[in-house]
Length: 308
Image (cartoon, rainbow, N blue to C red; front, top):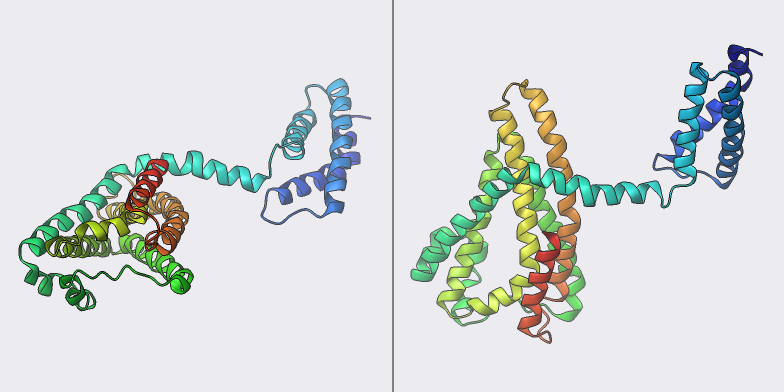
């Protein structure tokens, strides 16, 4: 029997094994029967490889069988589920690598929040009436309470699960707006970042003026470090998209945007679990009066350290 006859006689089993290996790498799981069949086919193909190595050592059928057996071995004897390995690869390798590549944009986004926050904080601390034109109407309603040294941070225990869920969805929405704003050449991303910076700084300055700044930041710090970091990353993703539109370099604008979009999506998807954790902290730890302030500040320090 020559190599071509050998190939034709065993081709059906090889194709079945290839199809099962392909299916095992997708999100759908193999049935118990398919797992058993894959094991049987794998053992059969290893025997075919041994025969091919002996009879047709330089033929391409032997090369094909070598690759098929190697792939089957990697799938059958892998140490952990493929989906879990991919998830670990994303968080331990892919996301940090993309973060480093996008660092100039993320740093720019951070400055677009921090610098307006410093300016607004100085203005509202020095002249509280500046909040009338600096902060939106929804925040103006909080001013009378701040003047009486009362904050809005007391969340009743029974409302905390709903509040936490609302905070998560709101933060994710803001982050996706900062990211999606990149399609406007980054202009809407700029607006979201600067607006949130003015809001953060304006409230901080106002509470500092009425001597409740420390109380506000004791509430904010636990979740704020990672929450702000996620907004910086999302905003940086939007700026990266905008830069690809404005300055595509040697690439066509569409190609530059596609390349930037792949990196930006990788970053924004990494923000989602960060914001979920921040929402849980903000809903359950930050408003809890039974937790002393050093613990809340430590939570902020610890989560920030783990993130970076």
